[in-house]
Image (cartoon, rainbow, N blue to C red; front, top):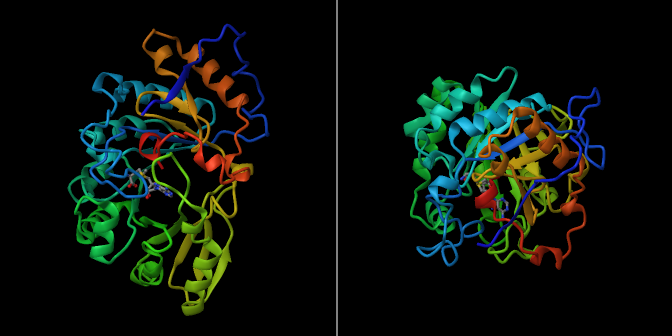
Length: 354
Ligand code: SAM
């Protein structure tokens, strides 16, 4: 995949990253969340994310030496925390295929005041949950698109059974990371008939299912608007069976809209990035496995931070570069999405992470 990544070797005067103003982009949005992709590889080949036709044996994944080392990620994480980041989500690809990930978790867990979490397909979680929790991982989000084995296997296209993921969820809960968030991407005709079963399975468990609208990330999944099941339809379908009421967001800029069962059996969430864009409150920055910064999930190019890291840049230079990228940020892709923009050559979700 040819990605455009521009080194940010500008000759501009250092951005005033240490002034008293909180960092804000061109639309006045602050920086709060950082998603860190630790690998572009995955052991699943989900048809809507890494379709096998593209991500086959010939696909050129990032070479090992181009991937940020844990020490490099941890150094950047401290700098981001100094710039206002409060939450780091480790993602991928599949983050648990990265060897000894618990070592990175331990390094990040040392950063004071940071909310540390991870998104995984759950297939390797049963083995790693205890070590990750011991290293300081506080929470985990597990992706699970159906409870029906045939449907799940057809989606992951790698023959993983539902039971493996459920074991992972249970191990994570046993390791102290409950409540677990369980993400289901809903694609019309693929798994939308399984929405109610998914809600029912986790009702009363304390875990929280979040239903995600299928998005036009990347350029390999053949996305069409007709495949999107609007969140409003999901809330209506579940609410008809189990009455729901809205819950206030836990913090400004929270991606999921929260709903709770009126009978007290817990809550669900919906993430409506297609039908109710939340660009106006988007406070997220993304770091790719090879050390490029992306200011939007739908970006077409990134900013090469690794170039600075590996040339011995001082912390202050990195602070200034990151601050400059954030201050110049103007992305609002989901608000301006059309059938035409959906065809643009955007970065793949497996490269930048969810
Ligand atoms: N491998 C990990 C996992 O499965 O959670 C982390 C990376 S994965 C790219 C992160 C999330 O993105 C998963 O929940 C996945 O289902 C979701 N995702 C991938 N492609 C998507 C798309 N086109 N629309 C909506 N969500 C998508």
